[in-house]
View 1 (cartoon, one colour):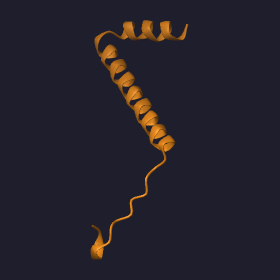
View 2 (cartoon, one colour; view 1 turned 45 degrees about the vertical axis):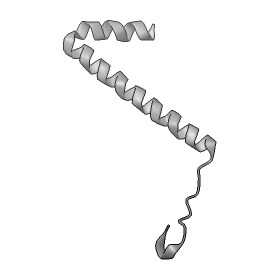
View 3 (cartoon, helix red, strand yellow; view 1 turned 135 degrees about the vertical axis):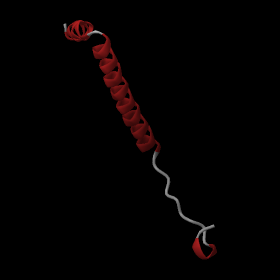
View 4 (spheres, rainbow, N blue to C red; view 1 turned 180 degrees about the horizontal axis):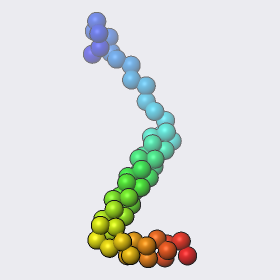
Length: 58
């Protein structure tokens, strides 16, 4: 129940919008994980990070 006994109107989002938002959130999460893994590799072995980067782009 909303204010003064009225039912609050909650517009629903279309399914495509929900799906799109979920995909964007998942992409951002993967990017963050990628950066965190890179930071860990750099801390352990800088040369390993360089080799991984070169392998990924060749």
